[in-house]
Image (cartoon, rainbow, N blue to C red; front, side, top):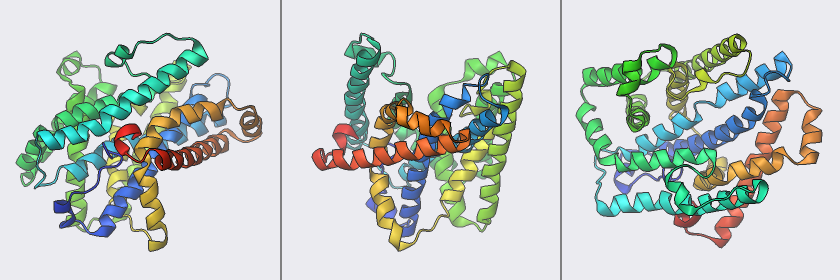
Length: 354
């Protein structure tokens, strides 16, 4: 992106990536942003565990499970595009990347503070953005700010492990033990060892390694798709089991460091690296990809307007839960795309609003 959403491959990187490979990144970005919209739309139904029918709730849980890998995939996409062998990190390049995130974050935070003040009467002070995100989805932007600050160190790690397979296996095993295992096995010492930026930094490195792997071997694309589906299936089944045991919606298996979400993310991202698109849709996909950061910032506001629109509510209540979620997600995505194109006509600089 401009962060993960709109990051373009450097001129140096173009020498090692064909145009079709850049297109897969655009397509991956668009699918992931739709996945995030689907997650947030599903959540409104997922937490109605006690009021929805079993089938209706399970539909919401399944759609959420299908989309849950979207956030890790965004992070892996950033790692795949940024951790190039010849990428140079200096004060100028770091400042440029950080500014692409910082200014939009401040402006959209002000927007959401004003929105919450209007709809809920919540007071705010701008300095509070140093303590907590103005809206729940903005946590991701804070996390990416941290990862961008770590970019030079992540590149050093990548280069050190690039041709040392044993070291890669060691890092993967260590990452799984420290971050994935404690989600299901309570070991306080592992909680004390955790550092979230290192955790998401792991996904950053995985993205680059997967790109190297998928372009240099003959593993059938089918198996990457099966790994994604297996991760989704485990996520869905564990969510149903945990929720049944708790008698309420339980999202433990949805956590981004869980082994099942990790499986889905790795499989889904590797599958995306093999995508090939026809020339007829390439230009449109590029246009959508360019707006993904902007769509990410605005989609929660648009979702709120759609979710509580009486006409949409009336229409969606006539449909099964799964279809309602898909329809609302498509409406939100379409509106965000239209608004993003309009905003770019007025504010062409990506550094301002994303």
